[in-house]
Amino acid sequence: MQSARPRTTRRPWLRHALLALTTLILALTGSGAALAQSGYGFAAPGGYGLKIYRTDYTLYPFVQVYLRTFDSDMQPLINLNELNIGLMVKGRPYNPMKRQYGIQSIRQREEATRSVLVIDASKTMSGAPFEETLRAAIGYIESKRPQDEIAVLAVRDTKQGYELVSQFERDERVLARRIADIQPDGMKTRLYDTIGAGMQMCAMSAQGSVVGGNYVVSCSLVVFSDGKDEGSSITRNELMTRISNLSVPIPIYSLAYSRIDPSHFQNLEALSKNSFGIYYLVGETTSRMQRIVEEIQNILQSDYVVTFRSYIPVDGESHSLKLGVEYPSGSGKYVYDDTSFEAIQPPPIPAIRSAITKFEQAIPKLPAGQTPYWDDPAAAPEAAPGMAQ
Image (cartoon, rainbow, N blue to C red; front, side):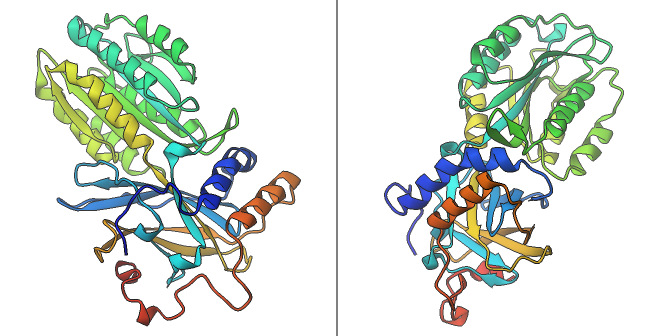
């Protein structure tokens, strides 16, 4: 096997076909019942991991699996290709040489991401740190793709404990104007209530729904605060329980900073680590915020989509799927995650049928009598050794 590298010339037919189809297909299908989720991923020190957070099978027999990869520093793995992927359906591994699946980065696709910025606007954050926060928030907006959407919540002295500065919005200029108007004048910091509201916005934003022609595949929180909470209606433990019970992860990326009291930073650290996010210890060095928000955007845009053709007949049943990543290629070590899909018949909508026909051209069915699996797995043990566990 060869090392992972950018896919620039190899298999352009799959790349271009998938890019052209994404908006049409996903806008038509939405989420519905054709989504499956699995548990959280994990990377041991010095290792790497992956998390499957969405499985879409509305265009069956074509199944799309959305995943996030990460090393021990929670940074994404780069330049994955088909030879890095081990795909197993109902216990049988796919042979990548039969060209029945492909992988793409979200960065080059049309799917949208969503983020909720939570900005601590209490008086203790006033001055240079708060100004740096607003600059970083605007920098985060400037780093997004045109289809990505951002909402903004400010921790303020309102009945709810926060102010809705902006609903989900794409327009960078509109978002920047609204953020610039935030004033750090709050007397109390109902941080947990605000984070809880941000999680609810993500959960109710219909992840996987149609948003102006772009399919929303993920939603995250970015929290700017010192971690201190005063008077929230929910406790940190209750918030942690909510996070643990989510079927689809909502990562919390927290930037912990304070000129006065860093003793509450651990609250942000706990929330981030429990939510599949990242805790950034900024401290008093607020000038680092700009680099951090750019890193967060890079993580969100570095997810992957594996598209494969299933050969299980339509039966309406759920079937197991195991997907592994070998990094680097040829290392012989796979880390994997599990999910499932249903073998269903797509609805008889002309546009959907047309889209499936184009997928047929991108990943044509194998000749009669052939399967996508390794014909003799025993003769090719290097194919996916980790997947057999």
